[in-house]
Length: 161
Image (cartoon, rainbow, N blue to C red; front, side, top):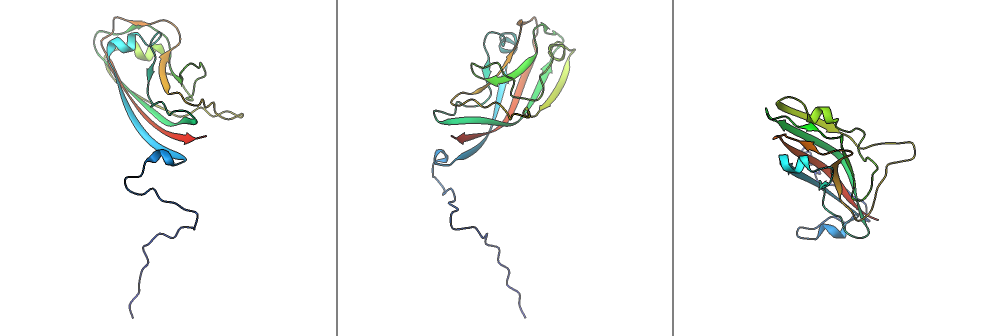
């Protein structure tokens, strides 16, 4: 007696798969990953020039962050001054992650430091702003004198509103 195994997925009649070559923009949710490299010059200027860590989703869409990993590679020429690093929607001031990276961490001695950040969760829900990217910035003064670099690994979803 032979046993036949059915490996085909069973889905309901309302399921519409994304066909090869079909534009993802036709879907309600699109997942993505973006790696953003920061030079020492960019890190020093974050208080006046935030850097986007996600794409701009376009009108009628919003970016929702799943996680952010920051790899900070510091050299013997340490950063000084500066303020906490935070992630926020362009033009907004509300932190979208559950934690910030302290200025003292950026001002640390030479070495590689990795920070794993999760989205902020509050009783009232998370803040989401449509049609803009999520950026890294710092709240107060610029960093000075440092020569380190950073990489930001951002996992996100773009939702159609």
